Image (tube, rainbow, N blue to C red; front, side, top):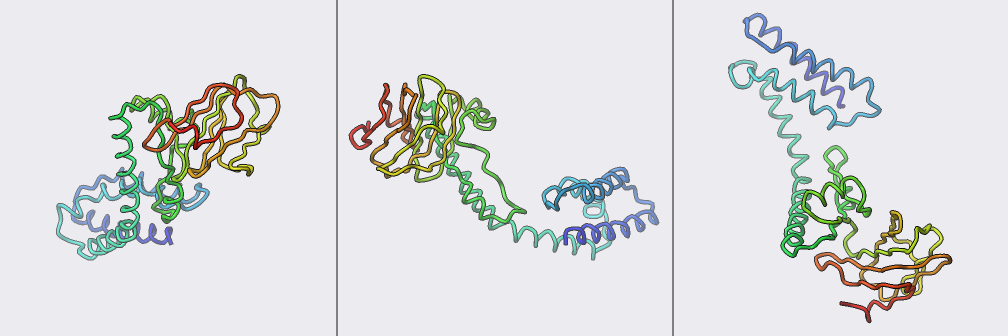
Length: 258
């Protein structure tokens, strides 16, 4: 369907060029030629038909025929077809715009709160589940991750003068375990409330980052050949709620709240 739409657009464009040539109206033909070639090449070499990838050449096509819409009063049918297609496209996008707008507003509110309270390590919501509900043609993607050393996390932290930025799902807390020496996390068993945990985890050097469900009351760390230097917990809006130093392998969270 995407290829058919492109071909129809190019056919209409060819009629327009013929009419402009007969009336000796100046058209920036270089833009039209480059855009058409770009579209043709992309149709051949792209591994899949991703609608968003065609936006740039279409913008060139629209700019190159701007005289049609702003300086001339003919080809009314072409104008009508273009406007109908535009409104149909907008009708598909608008429901998703509301979702992304609300998520963006929520993140900005968290950002302002963290800045006002001078937090240096901050948590943001991982909105992947909400964004995955959006049609793939209009979807935006969550760029922040659990790992504070990932590229996007570092860029955001540096821009807003944070030390570290993390992203975890709503309903979770962040558990940070700092070891005395670099330890393979696969050799460590995390037990939450008596059950082995399968929570999302990440490791960078001596630091281990792990999501912790909010309702967990007890943490136990099992394994061999490791020594813990520090255990911390970060929460949304609150910041650091636990900071214990020493080789402690069992923690009762209800008795260690700040």
